[in-house]
Image (cartoon, rainbow, N blue to C red; front, side):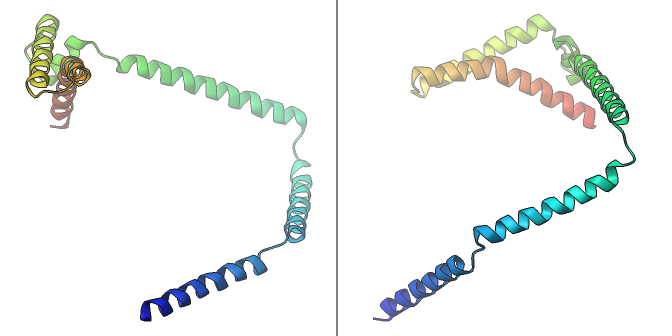
Length: 154
């Protein structure tokens, strides 16, 4: 009996709150009046601010902004090109005494190990294929990146 009373009271409070929101909600006229007032204020502000600048000044400002954006874009492209380092460089930074050929052999061995692990554990073939790709391409490169970042931190 107490639960029913509690449920009725909670539903009554929810209904009253919903009714209050519907009754006290702003009407379309109120919203329209508010928009018109804000537009009048922005037009008045624009008129007083625009007396000092001309179209020629605005065009010059836009052109300078466009030029600076293009220069910034070129600079970021150059930085991205400089950041890309070769596999040998990243192996050297990681402190691994491997060349490109040894790295690829080690990657193939890791991929083979992941494949065997997937087959032994009874996974489906597509999962075993994903394990092979992860073991051959993902894990060795991640390890080199991790070791490089650890060397840089220290």
